Length: 220
Length: 220
DNA sequence: ACCTGAACACCGTTCAAGT
DNA sequence: ACCTGAACACCGTTCAAGT
Image 1: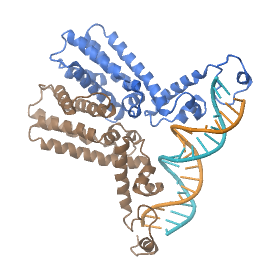
Image 2 (image 1 turned 180 degrees about the horizontal axis):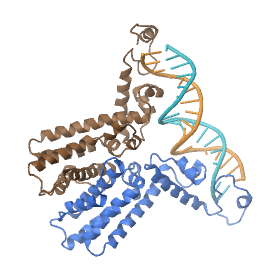
Image 3 (image 1 turned 90 degrees about the vertical axis):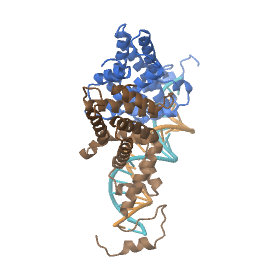
Image 4 (image 1 turned 60 degrees about the vertical axis):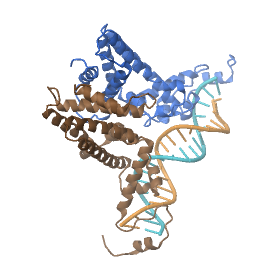
């Protein structure tokens, strides 16, 4: 609150730091928050599960004591939710970019989005599992967090509507229902490959294309 | 080894048991093993995740001390693998029964099997997650355990082959590939419903039928 | 202002011991 | 023969305290 450089500031500037991570200067307490999120995301990718991740491991990775995490987050759930929000953002950005890169053909855009979804999951299996198989969302109370990942489905619906408007899909089409069917099929492609690596799978892009064309009743 | 009723037997028969669960008599040490499996299965259904389950909770549920679990299993993984084997057996039995009940039409049998798979998952979400999303299978070393759940896929393939032999499927058909596509779609139906209960889903049996007919290129 | 040490009740697992 | 108590290194979380 007071901008005067007082006792604490003096101490920080002069004391040689004993902990691995140097103490943040005044007003930079937020840096620790970002470091915690980055470390959590890294460990989540390595562990492949929110439950296997420990806050103490996050604190070790950051170079800080366990209670320091609680300066920025009320509990472990809150850290995970914050990371999940970032990850959903990254996923959605990736999907939109893939659809945009596919050009003007709405079916091509939809196929590109579908492929990108599965590829993202296979490239980030730990993160995919946190977002789509994690236990964290059952304990969410904040209604703002409940809409997590909804955007991806909405984008799929809008791709379908563009394709239907262009007359590229056989009628009659309940686009929202079709989008949900597609999402389920695509999730199956990504999820089973992540969870059953022992099974001999076909090329994921080929499976995505086959399933999308089948659900849309397009020629194989 | 020796059938003589000696000191320990005498003690068991006469001492009033302090622990919640009474000590098993000679030769019935196996009863504890079964109780542990049953308790684990129950708690797994409740927790919905192998990682959330604790062996200490299993021991409490059985009424025994934590180290007692180690009399029958080398570690937590082994308990989970034993339960998973039972669960896979139950699932496969359920699917075979559903297919058999559907009668002689091979497509009807396949549809019944597909529906039964998803219904089993929705009725046993915790168990389904352990079998198809659990971390336990990545740590399996025993090759005999690696074939877990393979039977379900093989049965799907044989249903498809029956249908193809009856001329019910449009050619040309790589039945194994088609079976894998179907499995992915069906897993998506079950898994997303379990993991995203907040989404408004359609009737699961309707989605199963739509996806199966789409993948097999049958009339909707 | 920013962060930690010590503590509590949990966990998986081990091992010497109890009946 | 069947089972437990006490211990170890972990975990999430709290709270009084340190710089």
